[in-house]
Length: 95
Image 1 (cartoon, helix red, strand yellow):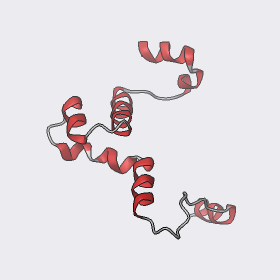
Image 2 (cartoon, helix red, strand yellow):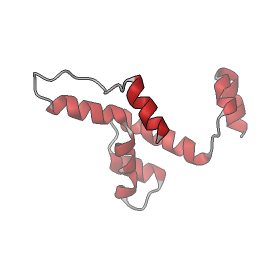
Image 3 (tube, helix red, strand yellow):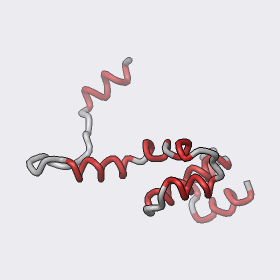
Image 4 (spheres, one colour):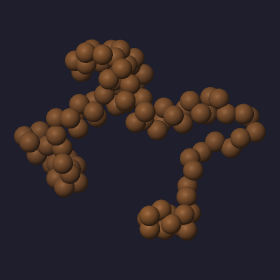
């Protein structure tokens, strides 16, 4: 709570969010992953008993998925992220 209060001075929107130790650990792991740090190193840093526990971060990072797809996409494909139209979003919201 002390550090959230300090961080809120620089980013007021943090004051309306729930920030726990898990959120801080997850954020740190995601930043390390994006920086190219191996998952085995992140697992050791976080104190995970098994490296497989850290693999969940690979599934959470859209940037990693997009880079992997871009590396394997045929040259004729247009890269990018799917953007659903309003009709599809309305349908999904109604479910």
